[in-house]
Image (cartoon, rainbow, N blue to C red; front, side):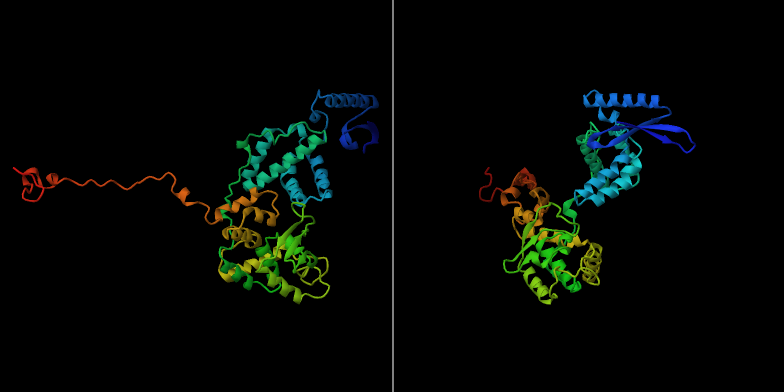
Length: 389
């Protein structure tokens, strides 16, 4: 606890009161004109802090810091922990969360306020996916605030499922190169410098950042495996390295690339436009190359990710390969994510499946009797089997 004496600009004296909070930090409580008043304010703050620790008051009633004061240090801690998503998190906090929640204390952020935030983002025409990711980030902030002892509840977790953002996304509509001929055409339409990157993505399923960071030490052409262990952003998305097979289509591409590589070059691809060591090609550069190649081949527009990683997984499924194996190659922690490609597996439904709930819907044909066609008195009694008199 501390009472600090300050001199204001107009020459008057003011006393600023601070109390200790979780993590060894000191939090500003308020200011007073006299030292006696400052001591009263300090005792009040201490009393509230003690009640909060004893469970008599929620932490939100004690800590006066606003979301805006807490959010940026929280993002900085995520950056120091090496989290890949910290840049995206920083953008969402600065662009969406701070402008709306910045001047609110944590106790003032209730489920109703979060619902107002969601509606305000919809009014600003943000996509449901962006709103969902932003709200999830807010929930993660509150979970860590509860661990730090500065919050007692998570307003995002208190939302009803119908109040949460619900992005409409159909995995079956995600584009990819439909045929093997399309893959070949796009490969040949790319510049020679870009072709090996495309081949690694479309035949090994590596993420774009993993392809750009790939080094020759990671590639064993004899054993025909690639050891994926880094990305341009640092650690891998799942933080675990993985082994990927070098397929028959990819092997000659890598052999040719190795033959043409300069001695001592470590990266699979030249780092930058001028070959400056330590610099990677940018992902948007690959996007420009793939866009031009698709236009040349007269194929639908799609991203580099769709043309490579998504195409690899889709054709793996269409070729009848095990979904569990492609999950390992792609680096998915579970097959739940990979199951989006199940609809492409040939023979997904058996003959018995198609025969289920079988009903003959052919309209019944009623054949009229002769008496109805010609009349009873006109019946031909001379024919065999006729009616005799």
